[in-house]
Structure formats: C-alpha cells, structure tokens
Image (cartoon, rainbow, N blue to C red; front, side):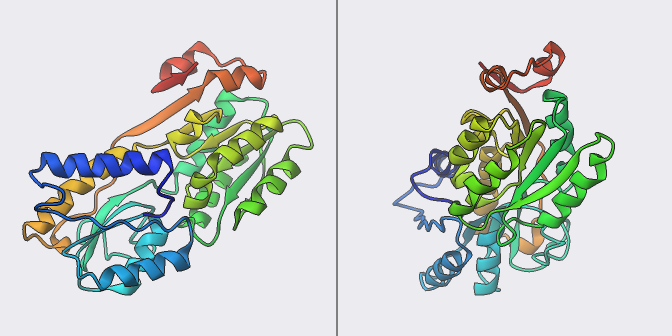
Length: 295
C-alpha cells in the first residue's frame, strides 16, 4: 500500500478488499493470510517492503499505485501481481498491453492522462474566475505526470488560463508552493494523483482555502476534506474488482491471461460549503451533474 495505515481512506480500501475476498469464499486467518506494508509515499521504503515480502513467499501480491508497482516489478518476475490505480501501465513499461499483459502483472488502471484536461475544464466551470492554475505534482512518484500536464496544457489556451507547476517532493514543500500561488486573484490549483498529496490532502486543502484558491483533486477524499471539486475514479470499486483477480489467481489462473481493465466508475463531487466560503455561486446545472454535492 502506498499511503499510511492510519488514514481513513487506507482503512476504507483495506476493508473493501477484505470484505470482497470474504464474499468470494475466503476466510481471513483460516484459508487466507494477508500481510500489509505501508510505504507512506516513499519509493525506497516501498522497495524495501517489496523485498521483505518476497521472503514470505506469497502466492500473490497486490500492489497499489505506481510507486508500489515499480517496487514489486523490480523485486519479482515470477510471483503473480495484481495492481490497482496505475496510470497507463503499458506506457510505463510495466506490461506489454492492456489485452495481453504478458508477464506476472495484471490489474486495474487508475485514470488516463487525458483526465488532465477534464480537471481544468471542471475547475473553470465551477470557478469561472480562475485565470492562473498551478499543477501540483511529485515527479518522483506521480505516475506519468508529464502526460497529465500535457493534457492540461492542451486545453489551457481554450480557457485563457496561464499554467505553472508546483513541485512537491516532501511535505515541507506544500505550504510554500500554495502560498506563492495565492498572492494574486484568479488563482486555482489542480492536484495530480500521488500518494504524497493524498496522505497530506488535508494540509493542501486547508492551505488552499486560506489562500482563497479553488482546488480540484483526483480523489473524492479531497472534496470530502474541503476541496472545492474532485473528479476521478471510484478507487474502492477498483479494490472490489482487484479482489476478484486475486481470487482467480489463487485458484490457478495466470496474470498473463487476465487483461488489464480500465475503470468504468467515476465520481464528480462539488463541495458547496467550500464554494460559499470562496464566494463562488455554483449553477444548479452543475450541481445536477455532480454525483455528490457536499453541503
């Protein structure tokens, strides 16, 4: 797992995985043992944990997000691996193709890089006054971040938005990056999907709101914690699906024969409470389009 154990989102994903495996007939502690490791957004820690888990000789592994999958990919070419939440795994060299992954890895992708343009589009729809947008990313662990940025750049001219990037490699980088953007009116923030930003989402959201910066995040957890908007994949649903692949592998199927699947469920969430605090009047049409409205 790429995040920290005590995060509520981590616990939700863990619970969905275990409940899904139970429904498939597995009994935790009796017919199935699961060993967890939590990387806390640190790739070197993920590598260390991957190596340690190899020593346990697992029958299968679940690797979540790009940093975990890279670590496991380096550690084994034989143990079956189901991954969750990886952006364009073929482009990253993790598999041969979606339909024929080819090696010991298969799983469920997160979102395509074209989401970048969608995030900017939604941010402008909800907060039309945004004219300057910073893209917050961690180049060490954000999977295919350049593709996301290119997707945002492709639509920025259409919306007359000036773009910049805010690189955050550690938690100490977060507040200065947001403070630098909040000095003038018309600012906005897009937070790319990454374990570091997910772990510290409350810090990011609170700092952005203090600076009067409309923010869109790639996970529903951002809107739950006070961001103006979120749009992304239903991650708990991916864990439910991943349990199905784990079940099939434990019953003898090979990862190479299981096609990598792309997500089908997406969540568009608007936090009206935050909109009011930012002085934004969200149109009824947009509210009707949202999958969830936080009052």
